[in-house]
Image (cartoon, rainbow, N blue to C red; front, side):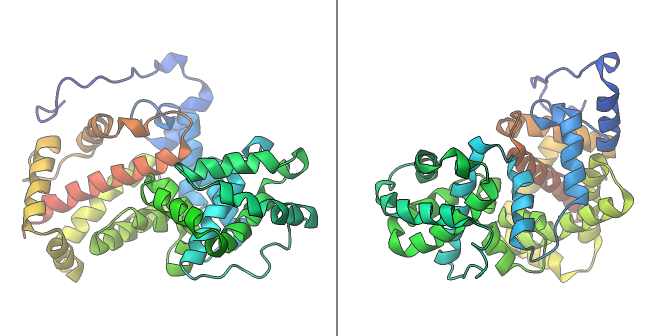
Length: 350
């Protein structure tokens, strides 16, 4: 590999080709690469299913509630097992509280699909929300819900999500301390968890982009950087959808998008450089030179993907745990960002 990379990085060994099943080989063909060891990326069948969902099944702006919940189930890795009923309720509760804090109303038809028995049960237990404020409010909320959910109610997780939305929205006024602590917990949560709790708010505030693109936008604090990267990742996804592109092609397109903007006369270039500032830009150049080789030329595709793999394993190994679909969104966000900036800096001299 390159002399610009540390030599003391250890990797999980790849599975020998003869030991791979036909399904794994087919999946690897859809992916086009192994991004990193560990996590979903070392399980090609699951990774291919994730990539297919991301590429082909994204919702347009302003989805209805049923569409939003179906999307969130995949985004968070939720199933409809009865044991996950408290998670559905807590997710809805946190989202409803967030909407109330943003002065947004819930649809009048929200509780139409919810049984009268479940609505009555929610009204009966609402007073005991007073016992919940304290550390880890989301976990407390899930545990509290599990205490009053009977088997009958646990069989209908989508209804529990809708009930949670209604109760959380109302609790912003009746139990402001609990809802305030939930909001504070969201502020410090991982990107995917933070966005999931605020997905309803996002669909109202950013009606011009789909949910996954909105998730990408939410991970950037800087305004211009967030707008540029979320727009480009949306363009790359659309390109992959139209061409049935692989995950590898999607990542390579990040470099292409970065180079394209850097070589353009777009006002976004000056706006981005002004927002980043000369000191941070200098640090970025030093970082990429140290981690991906000199910026004086356009690095080869295969080289950059290997650089990405090594950098990711060194800096974001915590995202490579198995059975954590939400972490895969964060992982892909960091991977696209890393490659986009490399492409941009290769051609930008300003």
